[in-house]
Length: 75
Image (cartoon, rainbow, N blue to C red; front, top):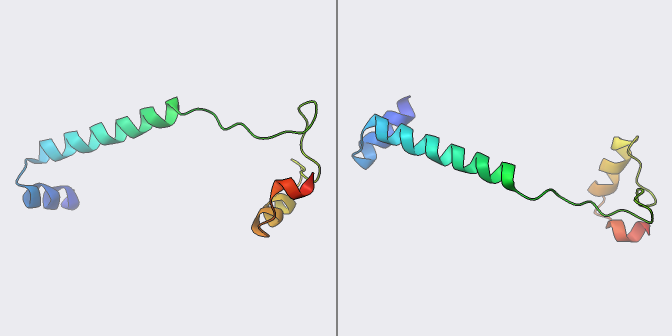
């Protein structure tokens, strides 16, 4: 609330106005996130995972990504 009061004072606006704008911005970002297209993950062949990628081993996948190796190298 202190930050809201500070913004209101700095911009010469009412607390209600600052809160309304913040809520509008938040709801707008939420709508954008919901309406964003889903990420399509590349798969190999008949819809399976690419070679070297295991959904059962998140640690290995994380290490692979941390190494900076592109998934194309696994093909």
